[in-house]
Amino acid sequence: MTLEQVIFILVSLLTLGTGIVVVTNRNLFHAALAMMASFLGVAGLYILLDAGFLAAAQLLVYIGAISILIIFAIMLTRRMMQAREAAFNSQSGLGLITAVATFALLAAVIGQFWWGVDAFSGRPDVPDTVLQNTVTALGKAFVSPEAYVVPFIVASVLLLAALIGAIYVAWPTEYAEDEA
Amino acid sequence: MIPLSWYLLVAALLFSIGLYGVMVRRNAVAILMSVELMLNAVNINLIAFWRYGSVLSPAADTPTTGWAWAIFVLTVAAAEAAVGLALIISVYRRRDSVIAEELDLLKN
Image (cartoon, rainbow over all chains, first blue to last red; front, side, top):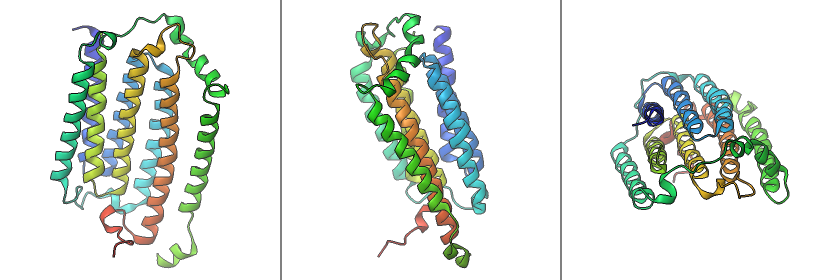
């Protein structure tokens, strides 16, 4: 077993172990911290896949922004900080069966199609220059009419609309103050 | 050398863990966190196929398809988190609860 495989297994264990903590921990704040560790593990997987730029984006967007947003939401709703209430609903058994069945299905498909197939079993050797040029190529592709300029603009508008909508929805209204 | 199937299995496991969380958690924020895990699993798959697939061959013009999709997923995840958390805070103000089961305004 090579060093790369050992690192892969350690990073995967970090990702999956903290992922299990996210869905099972009764204390939401601890679950949010575990989620940040899980995102860190996913960033490690990106680095193992030669996608360093995406790992940096993962750190900035997920750990830097989304996790902080979720922690703020946890702190703004005070009762969520307490682990007094039950964490799971009455269908946790059925949910576990469904999740295990989904994984079994996915694993069967993976085992059938990608286990030891020559074209996919080994990582293709790519010259470093191609990997180093990926960020440049991506930047050009995002503004190129033949590639992703329309999805890029649509994504920008989606983000703007989502943020304006979020501010509108979360804005305190007279109605809310009366009820409180 | 890491086989592609290892990455796919890790992503499938992470997706299943997130799916379990979405189905069984009562707290709306916990459901949102589980959805984020599922989106991350999808991104691992996209990047793994980008790295192992034929798209990255030096002859290809744009070896960026996997990255572009992963970044779009990242953008949509950010938008989804912002809107979801705003909804949760708004619901908490009006109903004083963030338990998904208690939000039954449309029932009956």
